[in-house]
Length: 171
Image (cartoon, rainbow, N blue to C red):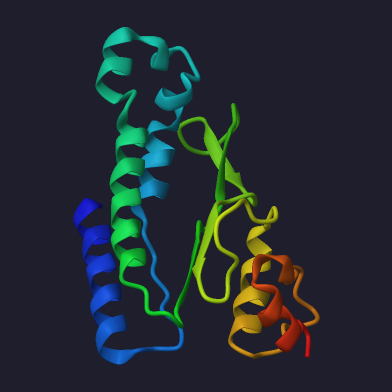
């Protein structure tokens, strides 16, 4: 998983430098797989996870991956051009669950996101997004009218006021 995600970031950076695409989509799978497998050790859910030898071996796995992913994402963001934006989203959220299909964790619709570059506002916590809000946001940023049938919505408060004024959502 490490090599797959590391290579995906390297390919995204190289492709962006060579091709200058309007949009770059990047999928990093390691967190999903590792979170399902080690979520219970991180939050100490269940009898097996409270065994000291297992906690010692696996308790820091999720945090270590987050540190590594943060560095990879930092490299991706470090060389953004002035007119580039990056939207990082999870494919789903994670939630502790006694009935989860795998390792006492289950999917939720409240994932994580990061938005950086132009036209996003600098620093600060953004609005609470739902994963269904991603497609309308990307459509708006590309100058396309979001599908009125889509369940998600655009959050103009995420972007600089001038951008929202010049390009109102839905027009």
